[in-house]
Structures are given as C-alpha cells and as structure tokens.
Image (tube, rainbow, N blue to C red):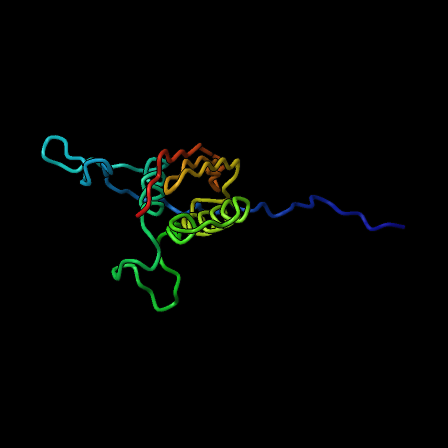
Length: 151
C-alpha cells in the first residue's frame, strides 16, 4: 500500500564559513601609541583583535572626527558624551541609551553576535562599564572599561 523508499539520504549542510577576524596591531591607550617589540609592531589576532577593536570603538566619539565620516551615516564610534556630560538625565534612561548605543556600535563587527550581562556605574563624567561579548563562533569574553572618562 505504501511505496517503499530505499536509501534515502539527506543532503548535509556544509558548515558556513565564519568571517575572518584578520590581524591588527596592539595599541597602548595609556601611552597613546602602538606597542613595538624588537623594532616591530606587535601583531594581534582572533579574540585579541576583537578586544582591540572594541577598545577603539568605545574611545571614539561618533560624528566627532572627519576621518570616520560616511555618506550612509553608519559612522564608527559611540555617542557617550551627550549622555553623561553636563546633563542631568534619569539614570534608567542613560543606562538604556548606553546599552543600545554601545551594542549597536559593537555589533557592526562581523564576529560579534550579541552583548549581554551589563553593569554600568556612572559618576560625574566617568563611567565604569562591564559586559559580556558573545561571538558568532560560540566563544565569549567579559569586557570591562574602568574609569571611562569622556571630554
């Protein structure tokens, strides 16, 4: 009554190629310069390159520097100064906007899947931020930005 099906094989999906992080160079934000060892720039890759990229994004105020201007207004950096300097906005509003702005900016990186586990402490014009960065390959790491001053 039912047709007999012999050797039915499902086509297996090939694993999708993950974006490559590429390489970058270690930057010392305290000294304001690239790290040099034995006369060469120190190369970083994988998660360390993502961490370095995050540090650069968080330290760059969006729309402030002409070099990052784009016609599509999809600029590099974050808007933080407008939220914390010279304003007396409600704490919940500031925290929600910081989470939105930082998540939106960081998720432009092809390896970042999501940002979670937020902790935000605001003191005058300083921020102490911590959050978890979840990558598309299943890896994750915690990121802390201590005494993050603007202005």
